[in-house]
Length: 576
Image 1 (spheres, rainbow, N blue to C red):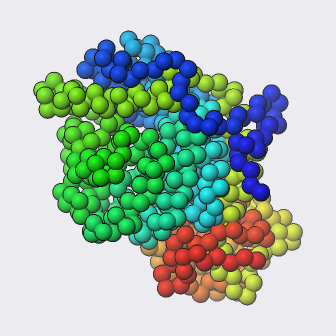
Image 2 (cartoon, rainbow, N blue to C red):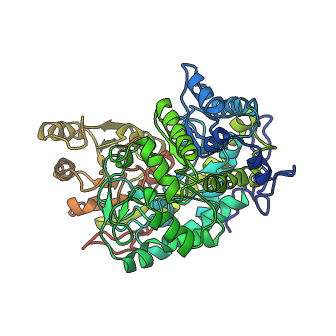
Image 3 (cartoon, rainbow, N blue to C red):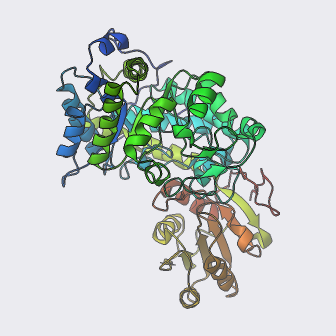
């Protein structure tokens, strides 16, 4: 019987460690009387528009926030931040305390909302000393809402210990396009019912744990063929498809009482053929507010992403987004972009282009979140506690269990797998990305020696493939990892076939999207790990370790949360 990460909880065994408390029944209000309207009444225009800008922080050589970040907080009066990536939990906690102190020293002393993109746990932003959790598609493959709940509880416990109150997750996009270059394994899967169930589960879990959840990217980024970091995507499906496939997951989140939703830089032609959702009154006000009845806070995706910045520019887009219905502008560029965002809003208020009543509405929503989630009374955190809680042995053990439940054995002809973990056979690992990390996971799971190889680019040349075959000559068994943001590069398929031609046992692992086997269908053993996002630096080490465990005999638990066209159905998954 699964016990939740909080309810079980686990005295952390390190000396002096404390038991992490169970989440409260709900996100309790702060102890003090907290009245957003009273604060709004005494705020200047500058203080109001500052609350509507969420700025990415910038660091000095010591890894702590630099003077530009202080200026953002104290001079621009911003109300929330997305931190840069502090190296470890102790530093993250000290970082949070520093910026909160700067905020406390302002005229009104309003606390910051400190946010992060914790899609696969706090490791997404704090790389060392935290608990890597499966990407959403790994949770979708596990098919168990209880495990998705566990992942949310672990994430919230670590994030709050480090001073974060706001999480830009879960991803509510339904990944219906296999070649989607930016969502992919960040989505729970291709089926609306599965995505809706897990989004609602995690939204409720975060609320119970006292953390702001933010489903994204409204009204859906899952059917795009372009990356909004690089260009402006659009989708051509009709209104009925939007309402049947892509909106239900957001509706489920709203039903669960989610306090915030993030916009998509995507043109949804069925609603507004001219403007992306972030800038569209028809989508943010007409669809999200009026049709779906969402009364919470709307935050934009990063406004320096090329989909917006190259087409409208920071100043124009900032005002357009607020007119469309957004409450918080994510200013994710350099300090100048924060200046431009705040300045654009202030100019629009003073000119009458943005009515003060409209600004007051958004500021009240921001302050309401600060009151509801205890930001006034719990703005400072203990770095020592952050280090004890984050990445503790119990969380790591639970994460490994969750990950194994998602690893999907797609094909195993002639019983190629499992490999014997107790033998002294040599294992050769060839991978198009993260070969070193995959080899380390294999080395942990097996007794025999492990060597590894990786090409210079994700599309290996014939000469590189020949070198991989040469190095494989001294091995007894082979693991080949393939990775793609969309269609698999042809060189990787040739690599798999060349290694098969050695006559040695070969197991292929899709380290990112699960569709790779379509490019090398003759491989005898194939595992989908869902471990690497489209931004290749985002690798889930727990999922790679769980995959290696499965290669060497652990029972795979996953079922495909997507269809591998013409080959494997949604829900397919083998067992040993």
